[in-house]
Image (cartoon, rainbow, N blue to C red; front, side, top):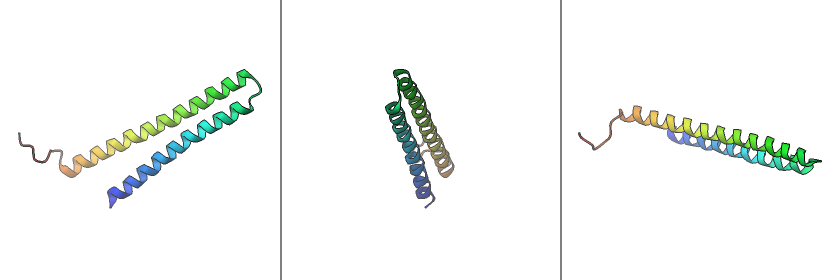
Length: 87
């Protein structure tokens, strides 16, 4: 039950991060479309790219934290040894 709750929470977190990435891309396109000069368009692109990169970095960080938690949970649950392997 706890695993299912955590999986839903992680899925929601990933969906939120992906939504942030999409919003940043849309905002960049909207800003570029309303830019009055080439320089303003370039600036809009740079700002948008920075927002997208930050959102992607956050998603990557969340995934890494989830993997770390999952590994920690697995180690505690199974005592850190592999089943069926005797050395």
